[in-house]
Picture 1 (cartoon, rainbow, N blue to C red):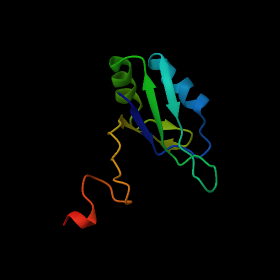
Picture 2: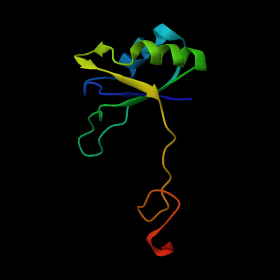
Picture 3: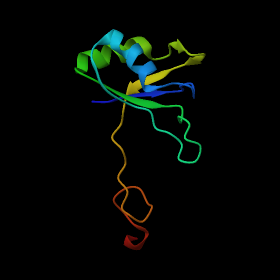
Length: 97
């Protein structure tokens, strides 16, 4: 499972997130997507932890918490939508209609 962490400061780093989430268990991975043009963080991240119970505890405690001047949005990450290669998301292309 993966945790989505939104409404983050643009100054946040992987180390910052690891430190905060480590209070709830072992953090196995942190990803802070960056804007392709500016190289700045995009204001959200994904965190993976060693166990589902650790993730659930972090989500319950940190969702809505004030951190770095913002109210974090923390929940279970949804699976990424697939792209069919035509720039369209999902299982259908324009030519199939």
